[in-house]
Length: 271
Image (cartoon, rainbow, N blue to C red):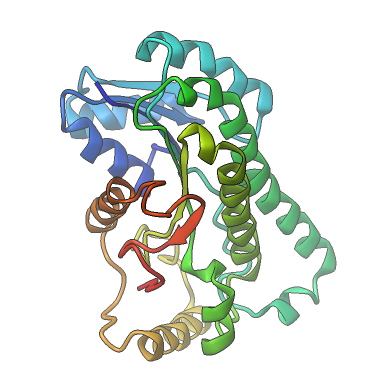
């Protein structure tokens, strides 16, 4: 029975990964969330509480809380883990609409946000992987997935002047390197590390954007269309998650994918 540990399953992509993967009764799904009661209720209401799903409460930014989940996961899975999906992330509003030079005009806020992004999107993933490596090494699939973003591709930023989401992009570029460095350490032991972008997905991050912010989003969309002329707007979580799962299933160390940064298409097409 393949086992999956997924962080941040309370909503968005995380919940959709849980929904899709738990549909196969042979899969064992463990989700880590900050609010277990609310997540349990959502799973009961929307998925009828499948018996192959276990929800654990922990803030990924709290090392001791994460560490405390390991023994429970080992009990649920029988002492191993096949897939570790680092999905939980901090996605701020502060950098979504302005370029980095504008953000830098508020130095204290910039510093606070960059440090929070680094703690949640980078350091907590290092802790997560390190804590769960003993179980991964005993697994069969041995796959570790970091959910990242096309915003972290420096070439795309350079070619199309993608100036917004600077802090988020910086943190995800760091995450990509984390996955590559772990791959360098564990590839010979058969562990596949991947940084995978789900593309542009509608999960409600910009639902409260004002008129000026909407104009900034439209400007970004025009740049996306220059990058990919067939781009017609964000996809839905179900489509994005299915694509990401297909990519991680098709990738392997033998194919040279260890530590790769790929899109939901399995290449560098981020849209």
